[in-house]
Image 1 (cartoon, rainbow, N blue to C red):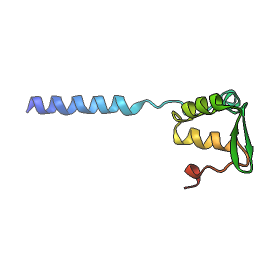
Image 2: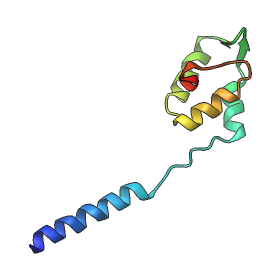
Image 3: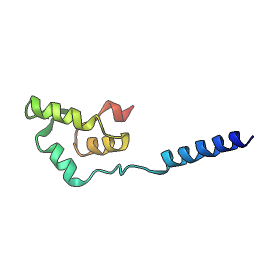
Length: 86
């Protein structure tokens, strides 16, 4: 019985530790400017300066949370991402 109580307390402590911390999910304006400087919107599509900009942008936005991604899309007026719409 003591072992069961100890196991339950241990699991609760680990769960509390895992779920108590949250990452800062807001993007700074400077971060957005850095991502957007070589990206334009033309006819509702993103246009990248070159393939290196495209690849680095894909790497960066792939690590975004859903809220960060929505914020990034909003920073490109005229572009509507289907990922955000649906």
